[in-house]
Image 1: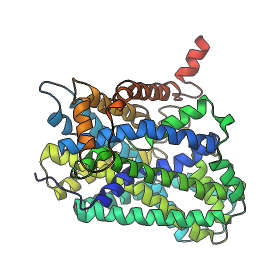
Image 2: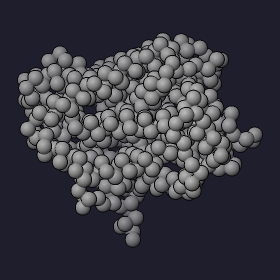
Image 3: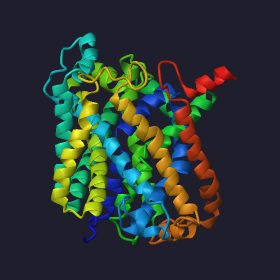
Image 4: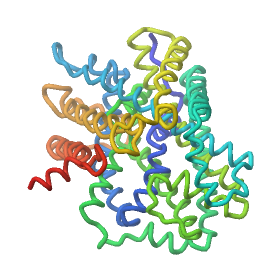
Length: 465
């Protein structure tokens, strides 16, 4: 099978950034910043983004470009005879599938809110009615499954047109519109009465607020925002040539990802401070609190529609990227053409995504963890707390170990082409410090996770001690 190629450097940057940019940037990042001290959280987050996110991203890109393969086949091409690193490739494919099993539902919720605002269904609602809309949406199997299905169809339909004419072209347009919408929304946010107070809270770090909880939260968010560890970056590395070094390209993607996350806060926090919405509202900040804000705001119907359109583009850029990763893996394993792969993968992904969509209504009695948990929480825990950090650790160990690909091969691949280079002095950091930090992230994620009402492993250990 002839290897497909992206048509331009811009396409590679926007596709890779689109994979990283998603609900985690424009939903989770703002509410986490609100909960963990605003500017203090942002400062620590940016530091960890550079010292953890960038090195792991470099390793994924280098493995993809060197092997010219997806995560399902890259280890077979780069590992030494008799080694078993390739087992992680199949685990990474499973992680991609598990990710979209719940991500498609979230993207469907956002699409539903966009349609509701555009149609004027949110106009004139009381605060109580506006707040109840999210629960009413989740309680309807027709809405949750229907809008999830639309997301799956849109994603694989895009892939069916090909890498350049479908994935690259549509994602480029979508990302450009996303960035323009963000700028428009941010400028509008500056005109609100609470903008000054919001900017001070969000962009002026209060060092006294930096504590262990802020550091842990920022470290986790900086790691997970890039969706590292499941080969989503490796696949796009396999679609590019060796004209430019991977460090410079990774820095560009990191800057774009950070820009979207930070500007999302510039959109959200002025609205919160203007309309007395608590910025630490948590996950409900997007679907409940902001829906009320737009309902009260002059012209809120249209501003709400623009906001959720921007949110939908952010979510779909990730959906399309992960779908492409899954499709590439399956095509390499089975030898299928793109159209056949899209049809079969689309049907399978839809079926596998149904449990999450029904987990808030028909199957809402299934509570895997706390009394408020759902199937989505179970799938998210497996991917976010387990597969992403452990997968990233596999990539790192493979790149630094003599029993894997080896640091010299990794550095040679990263530095091939014009642009920023990495130096050998980084070897001790990547060999010893980086793996330890990833292990710490994994342990903290397990220890602090609430497995049942009020129960965490860390809390249990503290009681024992």
